[in-house]
Image (cartoon, rainbow, N blue to C red; front, side, top):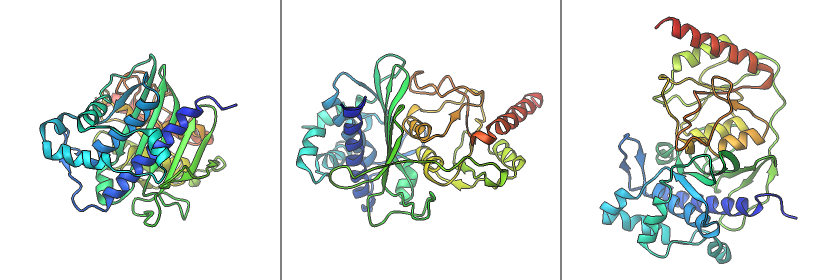
Length: 355
């Protein structure tokens, strides 16, 4: 008998693998078709094309499910040349197996491609099944040939059920995640999880899914010197002064493993690169997009990790396109969690006094 969500997981893993192959092809292109969004973050034609393929695969197999994705097709509708470049990418075959390509489905026209991309403009919420996706998390790192991710997660009635994250440049030869330690020979790695079924890791390939093995996180640390931080120092929304103060109070080196992509930080915390992360927003009303966390969060949790917000609340994926019910984030080993949370509480209390 198949485990719960077996079909959804299989389709999601194949869909993410196909999107990862698309991005790997684009890495070889000199001109990645880069434009800027309203928040000045870069987006490439690969972002649009990967979103179209991800949604196409899920929508074909699970037509009643809805989507929350990062991209919208407005720019492509206004720029015929850019639209053609994305369509050319979407139209290609990426998996060696024709049977698998047929299972996933591909848009039949450029207009259908645009409509599929726009399915990602859904509101999310607590009711029904919502697929949350980031076609390329860490686009700037992708453009530099560093670590980036393709993420896809199923959230049902507000709870993560499936998480799949492909890391096409990930090379874990020394057991650590580094921006510049890139898989130049293969296709990188994929991590996936189903709620209450554990987390798996496997090599990405150009054909069928490769064999996977269960992720076993290291034994819980007992000493401060065993703490290793995972950070993203390019973030414009986090208070690094407070985060560094916490790290120094615990005696750890900061920033430790410094990676640009939000999803890659989850991967580093799961398979190698660190065991503690604290994110303190500069502003109380700072909002995080759900697709920067959905998927990677479940994989970390199913591998034995724990992340809450700064108030100790579980992460809520049912509040819409943002994590509107959570403030900041904390990941820490069980043995050190109480101490880390106490430091966070103290620093936030001091900050309030100073205002």
